[in-house]
Length: 88
Image (cartoon, rainbow, N blue to C red; front, side, top):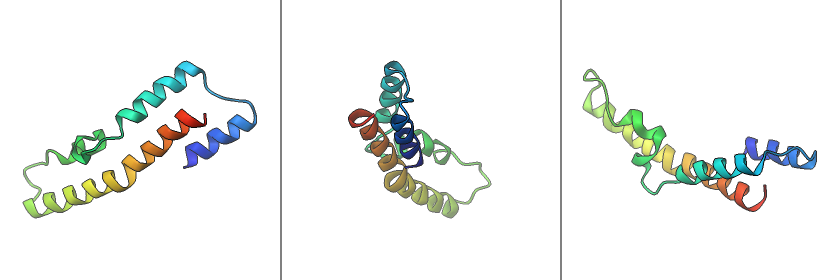
């Protein structure tokens, strides 16, 4: 939301990124809108734990990470991509 707000302020001041930059950024943002949270790059640290981490902690952390990616991260990237595509 903060990035979108700042980009809108830039638009009002007639300061925007080049089309090439926006197209590339949009492509990256769209790739980060995933259906399965465990395929998102921000989930990668939860795919492999050090042996010292107990299984119960692994399960708890994976559940929290899945929820965070599904409920916060992916919707934020979707909103940003939609903004770039439709408004910027």
